[in-house]
Length: 141
Length: 141
DNA sequence: TTTAATAATCGTTTTTATTCCTATTTAATA
DNA sequence: TATTAAATAGGAATAAAAACGATTATTAAA
Ligand SMILES: [Mn+2]
Ligand SMILES: [Mn+2]
Ligand SMILES: [Zn+2]
Ligand SMILES: [Zn+2]
Image (cartoon, rainbow over all chains, first blue to last red; front, side, top):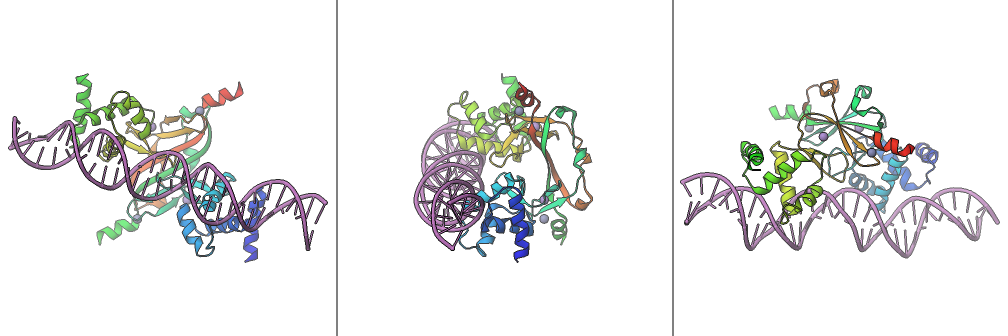
């Protein structure tokens, strides 16, 4: 219990962030929930454990963790920001039926264009939309 | 004048959409403004020509044109939907300094992953973020 | 351990993009 | 031209995210 918290305490500390109970718990939540949750899902799930946790703290903390490069922000749909703990480059697939977001590996070095010569590229994003395997086979039945 | 409108009238007609002055003008605007404008920019620019044009008409029309596959929707940032007339697959680069969005060509057939075998892919999106050439050279000065 | 300074949290309010509502107007068609 | 069905205008409603300010927690020094 204390042991696992030490990990997140250290992560926050290394980024020069003040250690708070909420920050440790939110970071731990993201590490254990790799489903790309929205701020709202983070809040509603964590209220069960931290009943006094506020919406504004969740938003502010998630943004702070993104700024510190401890989390990444995903904008697949326009109406929701999603967060993820996995910082390794990978692509995303969102199923239009079930709404699940799937990770997939991709060689990001292949993604280049002569038109961007002289540009400083800080971030590469790849996302697909469609229907996932499970939903396709469910349709046949 | 009439001649150019015939083009957009035909495009709407072929999709089974009712022809209206607003729809023709909005489609024409998107064709002539390949800068990936937001609904708000479409409205404010077009108010100069159509002063009675309403917000709700712009939103409803843009959505209808996307549904009819006459426009494509871009979600690069979470807080704004952008629209574009160019339906050919291409990547996008958003400059974090000036906010400009640049198009670039890319071989989309290269984008695949074994993990997505059996998935139905309807849409592929690629966007980068960083600093554009112009902003970089402006920084040196 | 106490204290003081600083930063985070909470609860609320504000902002803003988008959608919804409906009376009125416009377009399609017979 | 008259009928009908759909689109528009204008404003109200919605909801995610950010801003605000009082309170509380964290940190580091006394
Ligand atoms: Mn992911
Ligand atoms: Mn484009
Ligand atoms: Zn699915
Ligand atoms: Zn720039």
